[in-house]
Amino acid sequence: MQESHTAGAERYLLTYADLITLLLGLFIILYAISDVDSAKYKKFMNQAGIFFGSKEILPTENHNSRLDLVGDKETLKARVENFIKEYNVQNNVKLTENERGFTISILNKILFQSGQAKLSEEAKPILAKIAQILKTLPNDIRVEGNTDDVPIHTAQFPSNWHLSIARATNTAYYLMKNQGLNQEKVAIVGNAEFNPVVKDSTAEARAQNRRVDIVILNK
Image 1: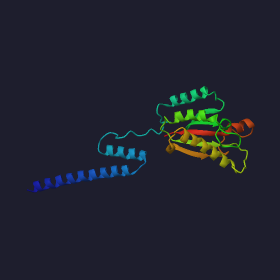
Image 2: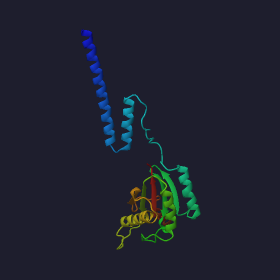
Image 3: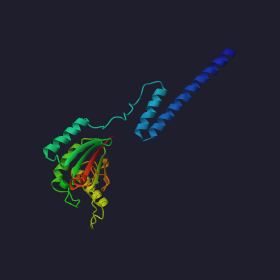
């Protein structure tokens, strides 16, 4: 009789332990779902899988990977380099890569008249071609205006900040409004003279710094 009572108690404890385990797993999953951070979501889901004795549920993101693109980096580079050659703008359009992603730099002399922010007609087919490339990518885009270190003070542009933001805005607006680039992916930044690519010491150097950068951000 005593043995039967003991066995019943052990079965109760096993059932209770299973219930606690299931509740713990449920809370982990609920917490993961409530967090919009995809990296944390994957981490918690994988921890839940390990807890229940299964393999990794979701692949962990490789933070060492570069750009998450439709296609690959070499395809992107080839497309940009081909259009640069097609339009013969090797001296005015550059493609670079760094920790942020890829940057297409367009010198202001083919985008705007001196001291102005209205896009030139010459710039529009170039931007249209860039838009075709950008629309195939899942990445967010930053359009950044940059000036040289020569101060500006006009009725329209009281400072280089105003000028750089206006140029970035007009470039981005053309890409979105006229070329159909997804507005949700685009951010606009004005750097004024504070993001030079070379030291502002000569006319040639200042010309290199007067530019709009279209940055394809790493995901």
